[in-house]
Image (cartoon, rainbow, N blue to C red; front, side, top):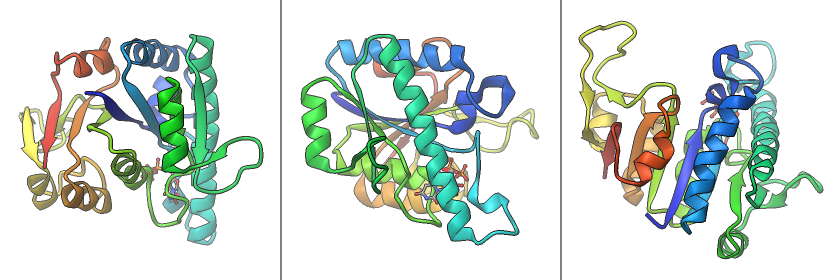
Length: 231
Ligand code: UDP
């Protein structure tokens, strides 16, 4: 793997608190990503916004406006995580699809390639910039655009199961599954729009648990215990 796109869910940043940031959790992620950058791997990051806000959770306000708040939540998350990354010695930049003044840079593929050449970790904040999308779609979109080898999906669950292990004690974990099966069985690894984008553009995903010790580094080094989604 030479270039990866790592997706972290907003909830994962919050640890047990479920909201806001859990610094020890983010610091552990930072030290793992540093090991990858030190090996010369290009790392792009997308972070969800669920630790602050989800557009569809408000039944009162206009969905487009609610989604704008969600996209801004992902910018806050990226600013925080980017600073923690800097505190452990990495160079970082945050890119958004819309202008955020001096807080971020506008996303462009050429700009990202220049950052990667210098060993800078690139955060893709603000989702796709459009309502009715998600950071899942933004993850796949950015992975395709930057020509990543693979998407690493770090989740609160350690892989893809045939049913929810919280409800079904006999749920079976897949070592490998095709994106077509994920779609047909509605397994919800990423949302449907993101799944289709993955399939059409042949972008594989490695799904694993963020809470398992060293799971990001282990996944890249081939000690993978999650589920590979093939295309
Ligand atoms: N969002 C959006 N467009 C995007 C990405 C995100 O509108 O391209 C908004 C949407 O409101 C979403 C929130 O940002 O609920 C947080 O993103 P995330 O993907 O974490 O949300 P989830 O899929 O968990 O609702």
